[in-house]
Image: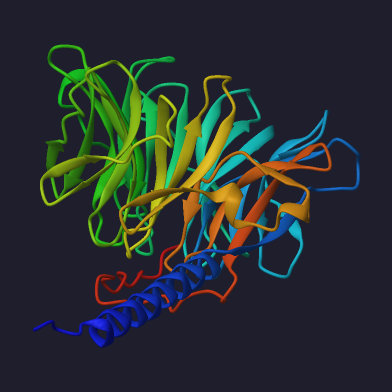
Length: 368
């Protein structure tokens, strides 16, 4: 006696077709969700050959960075749907905006009237404040949180050594110390007051750190000789770059006590620049030809951002320097032959800013 399995085989084949169709639809939906609209932030003035570089973005999509021409190099603030405006300097002729808070406050650095370079804090209506130094001639502002805490780096005497600092209006500049060595640099601060950067160790290496309260934690490396942290989310996830055992430099994510190698899109060098509270990370991969390619690391995969914009838009994206909690990304690229700052917005629109992993920001007290 034989058993007729034709109905079972047919049903199985039909089920496979249904599964395949569902998988294809899911991939198509995922690809669609990862498409971005690109907005050109332009430059100050209409002079051909002008440039703009973006370094920071806040929750509402305001961006800061640097814009210039052959004779102009100044920090800018650009609002969504609005124009680009230059920020006042500290009396000198050059400046750069590095970080921006959700209320539009900007930090960075500027030349002074006597030719020094100092960190500044720009507040709308009030203007720019010189943050001074830790005793040397140079300081750089890097990031600011909603409580008005600012981090950066300053020389201790003359032009070196540099030390990471934290600033608030009540106490001024605070030297954050090192990991046992000489120098340190702070690049990021979250709304809980956690600071990320890199510092020298007692054996002369430079390692990424996170400072929570007064404790500076050495985050280690990816098995190589050094590392540096460049971003930290409100959820406490730290990103940056680190050396691997073979001497290459790779972007990393540090969370729950573990440093994860994010890869490099089949190149040898990558560096992470920013992370949002959802864990999405942006940064840059460097090709063997020393060309820059911006990436988005999301859901366990590193993706080429250049493949997620309209290929007919005329852009060659070079960097991705910041990402906000709504998923908007800023950086710069080449457009019509010039370097221009951009903002990428998810094609489906900015995502809701808050999620279960996003702590509420600190409330800033009024300061003069």
